Image (cartoon, rainbow, N blue to C red; front, side, top):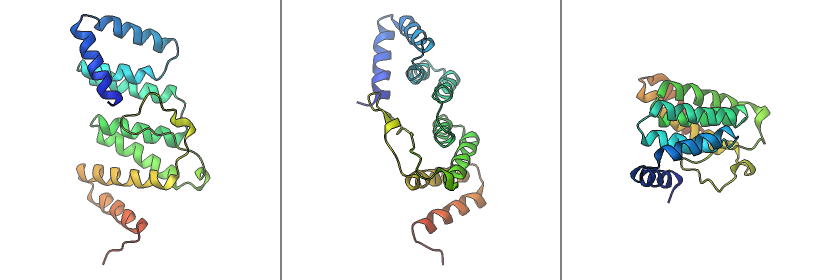
Length: 171
């Protein structure tokens, strides 16, 4: 069971049994006490309550309070904006991440980017990720978002970049 599925089920059970207010208070108290990861839990609860703007803000606050380096911050923010259907903002963050990935000074720095349903018991900050797979993940996201936004020239440029990085060529 994923973290998101567990939160959805637990929230539903607590709400059904009249403990929703206690859950919210407990989470907000623990966040105030410095447990930053609980912002993501509260964000999922807010989504279940239909408060998507509050959920988005909690996810962004989690990233800010996490003090991630610029590359990881841009990748995380891009994912958050992408998942909350804010394509302009997602493009801005993914473009920033791509620029940082292309910066030679970052080579060798570990990435700390979770998968979509990051397990709570995994400390990803200790896991090093090579930069090339990150770039390969950003490019398709940018191509998809450019296409959705009607930015055909940028979409084609990214498609060419993806093809050239895999050894394929046009023509």
